[in-house]
Image (cartoon, rainbow, N blue to C red):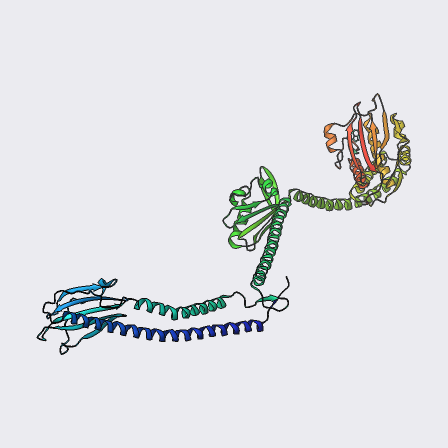
Length: 587
Ligand code: ADP
């Protein structure tokens, strides 16, 4: 707005000028004071003297008017004794000093202080006495003599100069008022100077002293700028407060969502034992919500309650990898940890439900045990197979003799059967690495059919193999074993007197996998057989060893496939082998 701030020099100049002005004024006042004081003194002296003289004069006149009379009990003030600006009160006193007569003249003369009694001072019986009563008031006492010149009483005259007080007041005002005005002005200036909020003055751009309007505008502008800055700071503070509030709310919501989304049970117990937080997983697992005592919350898991109690008592961390509990009638395995929350006087309990994991772990351990037992058995079977080969050699030598022994023939047959059992067992027990290559199932099935041709013809069975069997990735020898075992079982399941003797091998091929179907017109699968079909060494046959289907399932699973069996509506059994058309894993 085109204003400048005057420097320290301008400010000092103003102060010097003001001080000089105050000094000048004070000097003028002091001179005036002295002059009027002198004037007053002169006036008062003159007025006092006049009052005294008038009082004495009036007293003498009265005494003269009394003359030599002996009766002095009456007084008359006519004609007037004194000039108009005097009031007078007169009293006669007898020789004993008692007042015997009074007379007044002039305004407010009744108020003049006439003494009740008068006593002449000894030795001054013949002289008048004048006494000043107050400013402008005088008492004159004159003895009254008889004709014999004997004093018979006294005359007291009190005179008041009527304008004396008013004049004295006017004069006092005249010389004191300017003085007090100057003192008040100086005091006002000092107070204002001392309490001024800022020592800087504003001036116009051209350096001239600021006018009152310019100063007010400058002050107003300054205040407005301060108010604007305060308002701006207030708005910024409000924005920051709002942002902080939003951040706190968002963080609280995020924490709530985080806690709620944790799949493990999370429980926070305060120092007084109250469960202050239990997420959804905890509520579902323990069937309770927060707000209750931890002993109530963990009523079905007393060991966990004890861990919380201990942690609350000594601030220690407690862990149990597999805690067995029964919650709502279900056996559960929990992985729990209880730890104090630093600075919060409460403990955090985390409980993961690892029931399935624990079961899986147990299964794996059992499998490992079985595997090691199986490997042991496989080792023994291998040795057993070597011995069987030796026995078979000796039996063959016996059979080659001139007179063939039926016992030797039977021995050889039994050795062959045992050898087959051991071979099958070794196939089942010893893991064989599958080398994937395209396997034309149609060709494989033809080879199997050729192998089974004798038994098929012998049993009078029709073996119907579809021509559209697909090519799948796999191990040709193992897949051949799958088809042979399934087709041989199907052929063996058909009784000799069955009305229809038929075995079918066909495929239902989809985009990603093919299902091989082996169907027969046999007696079907009783429920107890279906349950144990793939269990090693389960057999219902007199000469069977129960490893065929176990080997089939192992090979199929090794090819990332699956196998199932069921009965056909028209009778007979159906085995379904599902094989993927693409390799997605190797074993
Ligand atoms: P094994 O042939 O030596 O008995 P497998 O594991 O091949 O051993 O077969 C187990 C049992 O499954 C057989 O004993 C038989 O009772 C039953 N089984 C297998 N295939 C069929 C089928 N197609 N029809 C009826 N039962 C079958």
